[in-house]
Image (cartoon, rainbow, N blue to C red):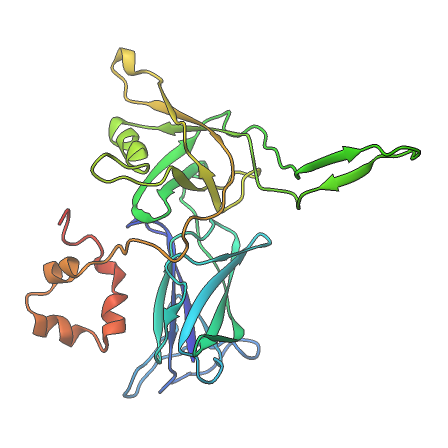
Length: 319
């Protein structure tokens, strides 16, 4: 199988990594220029059948366990292993295309595929690593609703954003009769980040409205959880936090300006429901791009390829 890992740093809907696993039915390798397997230099393909050009993606050859019929994708980043949202217990027949909407910026992300056959685990396969570039502005921060990546906004760190963080383990030291030193009694390992005082700047009212929209409306309710992706040295590159109490303070609104600051005391939480995600691509988008079903069907070699045509996400507008 051929695996391609393609960083997509644009903001439609959010910066992401595309992961494709496809059969290597025919591959013109050209003149390989890398040092040893499993990396491939695509060269210039020039024959019939499904072809892969070298392009920008990282290409890796992998062998999946025989009988694999379902897969779960994992990402390892900064010593943490998390399931990739929307890529949990996915059906696998010859090929699959997946999106990681939650990869960290400018840090190594290594992907592993957990394989199942008939409901039983049959092994894990390392797919390779890639780096998702962050926004050009190093102080830019992407906030998004985990369950719906289309609810996202680009804000900027203030000068006093997250000056300190806490990480503690539950438990304490208990003295015992007749002993010189107390004994540590702990209920578990060290936890995540707590007490991070986020101070994020919205440059205009449209941006401020988008910040509030990430937490939902009466018509479109959402979980009070944020995924915050930044380059802040004290915060994880992939940082899920509760957002129960969010404050907006005007910077210069009283004199006709538009800037405001959003404040939140952030406490790290586990990613909610990693199997669930609202797809950014709908059939309405494809209908808006192609004049007929025949034209649409002719543009894609398979339904899997059609379902992965994320470059057309949002083409239907607000439909």
